[in-house]
Image (cartoon, rainbow, N blue to C red; front, side):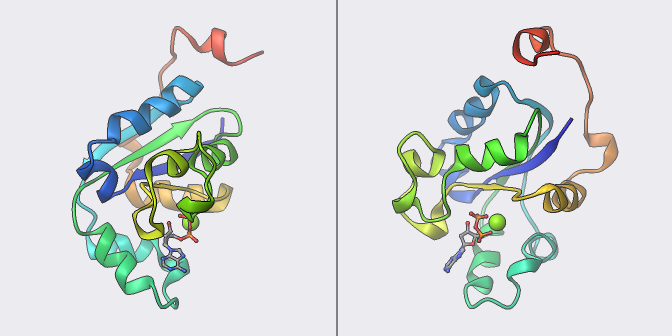
Length: 150
Ligand code: DAT
Ligand code: MG
């Protein structure tokens, strides 16, 4: 089953939106197999945002993601990577449709509430950055047969 990494960014935690954001993924039918509140260190931020290292906004990005605690989770489910990205909406909140997390909760690109892995390779890489294998918990949900066909 596919897995992805999500981060409720500092502004999401500070604004008290963590529960609402996580609830959307639960209500959709995805399963949390990892979840924690943490302060991201500059070292972890550099690994996580390595793809952006050469960009002009990179120093601000690292400063922001390390500025206050985040909630990091691993979600599991069918097509969870692409579906999570669709539920987040586009990077620029002013382009994000109502009904998406960024469309409903954000107005600024640097304060767009949520991170989600953008592909299978980045999901595997990012899960490995934030979670040890022991921190990922496999368990059946009683509702699984009512959510996942087959
Ligand atoms: P996403 O978060 O939608 O995957 P991304 O990976 O391209 O977007 O960028 C990571 C974050 O960096 C994004 O959520 C907000 C910030 N960002 C992206 N492009 C930016 C830009 N041109 N100026 C300032 N911040 C930017
Ligand atoms: Mg990205």
